[in-house]
Length: 294
Image 1 (cartoon, one colour):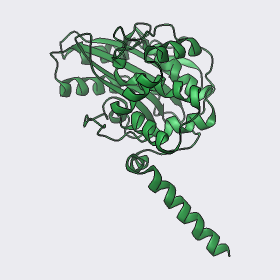
Image 2 (image 1 turned 120 degrees about the horizontal axis):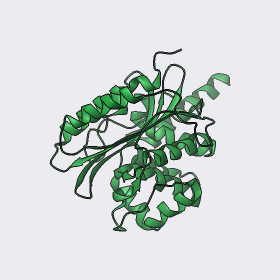
Image 3 (image 1 turned 180 degrees about the horizontal axis):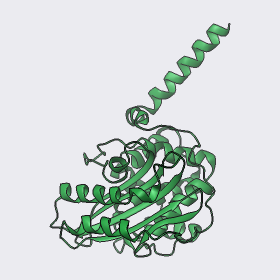
Image 4 (image 1 turned 135 degrees about the vertical axis):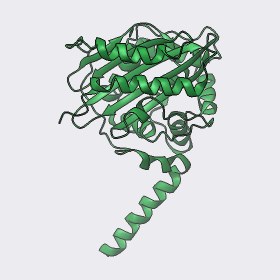
């Protein structure tokens, strides 16, 4: 009987993997999928930086400036365990979000109807992991478009976040790096365990190629190949500028961080140059995450 029960358990586990399907294969890319391992206690605003990170910021800026095309950079990195800012640069200045706004779309859906499951769960997973715009388009229209942003601004206390001027262009929502980190602080400290596990499992399993074929392993995933991460990337065009954002949660040997590095350039820059420069800039900030400390 025990052997039969164990066989049943194995079959059920296999069935679950099959149901998740497609994008679920990518869960193996990163560790901790579906767990509550991203729980952190930084619910209140983090303390200001204790150390001067000017040299690291200067190196990141130098990398971006070398590309020309008028780069505009914003940074916020918060140690979620200490609930303290590690690095900050123009963090209160709003930038176009591109697909990072999908975090607000997902959180608003959870507020309205609970953690999605079945086919809707698969769709929202695809929206976050593979950055599927078709799902975002549907949910944006279905749930009120700009009102999604307004509801989350009110709920989370976001201070530099505004809906797009064109109600149909969700990627032109503007958020500051500080507000993006506030969203991650809510996910890790304020959201239900079920909701947190759902969102972070999707972000942990972000495949290299997004639904539109874009290589989304720029910035955090490429700069921290040995760390555990859960990311929501953003890329696109807004306000006649090229937008590239790398945001997410990063776990090193002993610490967990929320990271938001947001950049835009004139549209004359080529995508390979932009992604390479942003990845190098994040690499220059690596010391902020104290990756080598046990």
